[in-house]
Image (tube, rainbow, N blue to C red):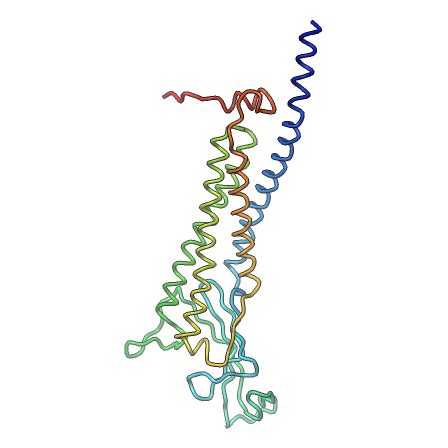
Length: 267
């Protein structure tokens, strides 16, 4: 009896560090699961807003169309809206005189023009009437939207599998969750990368959207998307790291040791 008690006490003492490590593991994986769930809603918010790229025209940068000056524009995943000054020398309104360093003394009006790259543009003589419409940008938009929608479903699925790993501690389910999180990381990263490429393309080729002397910077939605990428990558790395097999004395509990034993899957 004394020998059994001593062996039991020794076994408990040996497994105490394993239990502490298990508690830390559960907390980290739980935090990853919660963050992935939150990042799904953050991603939806980022995709649906137009605060990805801000093109600044300072006090007015002249566009290729004479008499029009770009003040600024905000780009989303599928739409870009430009705030433009239209010079009108015949304007008699007192509040239409713009007194800024860029267009001092000019009379005219401000207006907002939005271009939706998901809709077919109105054509005139084989060219879009909206000079801001660009075929390459439209292709970028379709790519971003496709991967953006796919990533929403993948993140939701990854969150569900992450929750399931707490009910079934078998290592293979953690590896499955890690794989799904890695797919989410890849999909969201593609959207961020394509958005950066579209900004470079607008700067080089779409002067009606990105005229000379203008400059751009990335806005809040872009950085929210980057946070989502990092969260999914951290979740993938965490689930993969803690998916190691723990057999026998390496497991914190007998239940975990049995869960990682080889299993024959029958019909």
